[in-house]
Image (cartoon, rainbow, N blue to C red; front, top):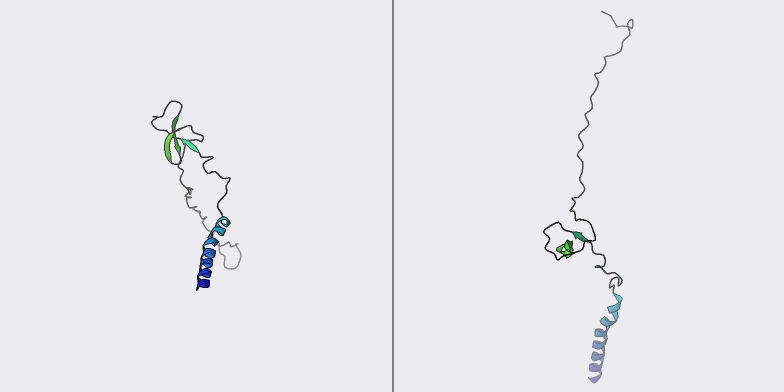
Length: 109
């Protein structure tokens, strides 16, 4: 009975410790990347209630006070497709059959 209990404790410790060994194996991202390092701050044309030296800017979709490092934010639509007018082909009137006088069946009147 004592041997079974010892084996059960050893098995429980082995199972719980396996997750700790695998912790460093997963991808945790690029440690050198800072997503906030180059945030574009667009100027906002609105009422200026900012302290002197600052102006309204849009940073991350939020209007706040700061110094812009990009141009004005423009919400451009997607690709605009041009509608071409249909091409109208003018057909020339068809000429009648060419028949030279004197050929069998041709009579000049």
